[in-house]
Image (tube, rainbow, N blue to C red):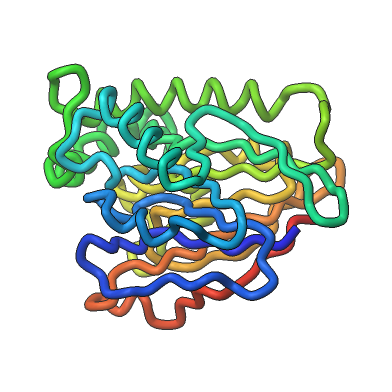
Length: 258
């Protein structure tokens, strides 16, 4: 199965016209497509199935709890699948059954360990103020993000550890990165990095392919495990052109599910 991956298009401000990649069997949207949701319309009638995992900016200026059902309704009307703490099994043209496990997987701020958590949460304050989101009438601050993130992590681990079922391989899709290895090299390790990456390295061996967004840079690396298998981690984020982040971005790039 060949996947076209797009994330961090930020169509609310960016000028970009997504086009189907020739030979793709599925399009994966890994979040931060358009904070206004208007840009999602561009994927209506896409020639192959579309799976969407929401990013943090899909909730800018919204109440997170009430936004989910509204976003789900919008995606259903557009004809594609929103995954949030859900999985779906799709078959390739060759009959290979692929389980897609999806969640935004908000950051829990434990990237550098529990002793650095408070520092990381303080660093997240600026980003949370920019989002200006709420949750059940309260500001969606770092403490609330961590609470939601831990729920995502709990579901994700349980789903990935499920005994083999009616699938041949597993692809995990999260907006936030699963490993410090995905940190943006422009900034390196700093407290704010914990707002972009999680320490989910222990879960990586449970998927053959892990797709993420959020970092405005591209990644394609492999992480080995004790049993000799390797998990491929990919990010094909576009980012902001005025910051030079879109330079080298290939919206037609295809990734094969092993």
